[in-house]
Amino acid sequence: MSIEPQEKVDVAIIGAGVVGLFIARELSRYELKIMVIEKEPDAGWGATKGNAGIIHAFQLPFNSLKGRLCLEGNKMYDEISKELEVPFKRLGLLLVSINALESLMLPFVYLYFKLKGIEVHLIRNVRKIEPNLNEKASMALYFPTAGVVSVFDLVNALVENCRENGITFSFNRKVSGIEEKKEGYIIYTDKGSVEASWIINVAGVHADEISKMAGYGGFAIYPRKGTLLILAGKRLYNHLLAEMPLKTDPKTKGGGALLTFDGKMLLGPNLIEKVSDKEDKSSAPGDFDDIIKKYQRLIPALAKVDPLVIYTGLREASNTNDFIINIPKKGFMNVAGIQSPGLTAAPAIARVVVKMLSEKGLTLKERRDFVSQRKKRKKIKELLDDINAIEELVGKEPDYGEIICPCELVSKAEIANAIKEGHNTIDEIKFHTGSCTGECQGSYCLVRILDAFTELGLKEVTKKGEGSWIVRRIEG
Ligand SMILES: Cc1cc2nc3c(=O)[nH]c(=O)nc-3n(C[C@H](O)[C@H](O)[C@H](O)COP(=O)(O)OP(=O)(O)OC[C@H]3O[C@@H](n4cnc5c(N)ncnc54)[C@H](O)[C@@H]3O)c2cc1C
Image (cartoon, rainbow, N blue to C red; front, side, top):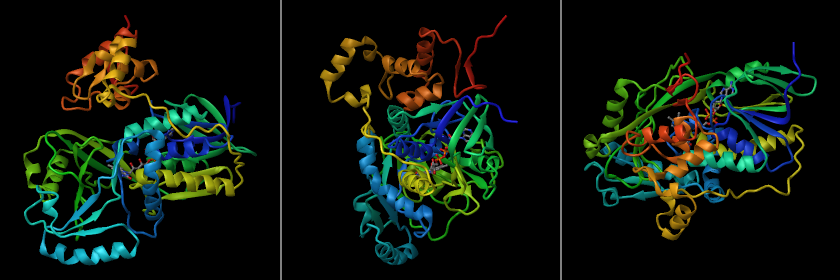
């Protein structure tokens, strides 16, 4: 039996991962009432949180949906990063041969990519540009369009820009049921119900369950774990590196010796299949050794480098092993199975989604006041070349001059602003300000962040929401 819904929208997007957010932004160009419903306290905490930030140059097979949308999405990142003011660099990928067989195959692989229209160069003495590569490394394929983006800056920028364009976000709200009405749907959640003319299901590893709630069970999601290592210390390479794959190792397939947008060395991800718990993001004891061993083949000196942090994400692989974008019934759309290169393809997916919605009857009337340019509030760390700007900020608000996180140069004012904006878990503070992500991994700044919470009158603090208490008031 249905009850009167609390809110009514034209489009409800279930899932605030990078794909849901790009779709929301694309739809905010039109006169529509849109709500994004997300079960976590903030955006990007699903597969998006666990990714490597690579904007891939290509994805095989080329004729798959993921292959085509990867190429399109890659091209869109220059404009997106300018509009949203998000750090993005085309570092280029070197696919390196380190044995005779790989070197023999490389020219053929080069021709294959050329024929497919991919920008690629054959490099004969690769150690000239990457001297720390294995001594046996000789040739490489260079893909200059491969890049790296700051994923959390991107996610935060998308949310800000969507909000500026009138989109409502409903966080900490889990969808538990869907009822079809004569016109549209009622979405049941743990915080009341919402009526929507259209639902877009972008719920990541849970997309198959949401689809079943709407009466369509046409696919299944099989999560696959991927663990990544961020390393401490001096950088040993300047491009994204991967070994020419001849045969894939099922445990460490894919990935590379990568870099984060701010130049830290990032290795992985590996691949663990048959994951039964869709929320299990734990790393296994063997992951670290497997990953180091694999990339030591490329850069032997990696064996001596200390790890900074290890993290695991869940790829939302589907039974088709490709992206699933369909409208199985009126008013309901699935955007599912968005495994890698989903981050790369996300802006192109959003365009496809809007086109399909329009073809299936969603009225799209362009808004005149759509704001494409996000107005970014610069971080202290980004103002280091502009001492006048820092002086002006500190003059207005002295707490900008008190550095709470010395590794990543985050000030007390930036932490307090994030808390005042409603980010009241440690992970939100981390992903909005960059604190706790540097060399000390929070051992210096965490206690000072807790002080900031206390100063603002918050007496209970969690790491990532209900059940992960760091400070909790016990009654009695
Ligand atoms: C280890 C790893 C490395 C990767 N590296 C790269 C890379 O370098 N480059 C690249 O292009 N791609 C990469 N990817 C792939 C990329 O991260 C994903 O394709 C992309 O993040 C998918 O985004 P999404 O929005 O579809 O899903 P998600 O980010 O998972 O978002 C889905 C959201 O739905 C929410 N949700 C689920 N159920 C409910 C419910 N019942 N009610 C409300 N909300 C719900 C979830 O909380 C989640 O926030 C990587 C993936 C992994 C796992």
